[in-house]
Image (cartoon, rainbow, N blue to C red; front, top):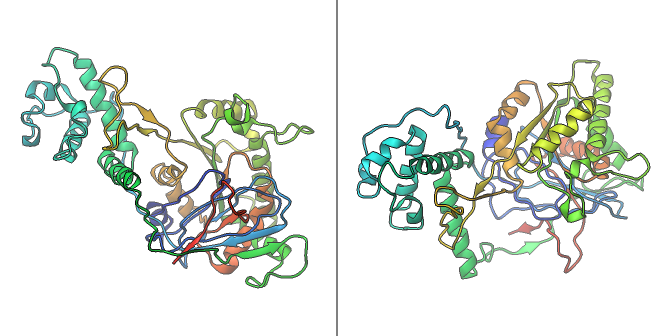
Length: 431
C-alpha cells in the first residue's frame, strides 16, 4: 500500500479535547471498529478516531494536556473513508466558457447569462443545478437571475465562488451538500447510526514510565519502547495542526505563539521545533547519515496563516532549513441556512457565506499539496500528528513510535482514561 493511497482513503474523526492524532493506512474505516483508551504520561487530552490497520505502513500520534497520570496507552484499529482530489483555478486564469446552454439548464438560466461565465463557473453552476434536481434547496442561488446586462459582475463572482467551493472539498460541492442533507435529517429524526452496536472500553497497549515492569501486551517497558522508537526516527515526518486562535484562553494571538512556561517564555512552536531538531540530530547519530531531514508541515486556517508565517519569519524558522518546513492553509466550506442544506448567501445574493472546517482536512491537504508523494519518495514511513498546544505530549512520541514499530500498527492514538460523565471525547470499541 502506497502512502498516496493511504492518504486518499483516510477518515479521522476527532472530538473537542483531542490534542493530537495520527493515522496512515488505507482501506475503509468501518463503524464496527474504534480503538484506544488508556493514559498518557503527564497529559490530559482525549481523542476519538476510527483507525485503520495494514501491514505495510505505520502512523503515530500523541494527545494530551496536563495530568498526574503516569501511564501511556497506545492502540490501533481499522479503517478510513475515501477522498477525491480536486484542483482549484483562480478566476484570473479561468478559461472562457461555452455559449451553448446545456439542456439541463434550459428555463433556469438564460443563454446570455450563461455566456457571461468562465468555464469553471459554468461547470460549477451546472453541477449545482443538476444535483439539486427534485430537491429545490438551492433555487435561491441559481433562480430568478436578472437579464444579462444587470448585475453581471455579481453573477460571475457567485459562480467563481461556487467553483472554488467545488474544488476545495473532496468529491465537490454536490458531495458536501448531499452528505450534509443526510446528516441533518438523521439529526432531526434522532437517528443513531451506532444503535446496532455495543460499545466497550478497548484494550490498548499500556506503558508506565515510573516502573520497570514491562507491559503485558508489548512486553516492553517505557524505556524499551523509546529505544525501539529511535530505530525509526530517520523515516518520520511531523504534522502540526494549528488552525485556532487563543481567544478561548483569553489570548488574542495564535496559539502557537503562546508561552509554554513563565521561566523561559518559549512558545509552543519553538518547543516543537527544538524537539524535532533534537530528534533529527539523534537520527544522524543512529544512522550515520547527516543528510537525514525530518520535515514539518503546519496546517493553518484563514485566521492563523498570516500570523504563523510572520512568527516563523521573525524567528528565522526556529532553526529549520528553508525547505524543511511547509505550510498548508485549510480551505473553508460553504455555510448552510436550513435543514435541506441550502447554501447561505451573504448580505447580497451574489456571495456564498463560508465557515471553517474540521481538522480532518489535514489528510486531504497533505495529499493535494504533494507531501504524501514526496514523503514516499524520501522513504518516510511514519507521520506524527500534533495539535498546537500540547507541551507534554512530545514526551510520548518516541515510545508511541516504538510500540507502532513493534506491533506493526497503521494507526496509533494516545489518550487518557475518560472519567464517567466527563464532557470529553473518548475512543471506544463498537461491536
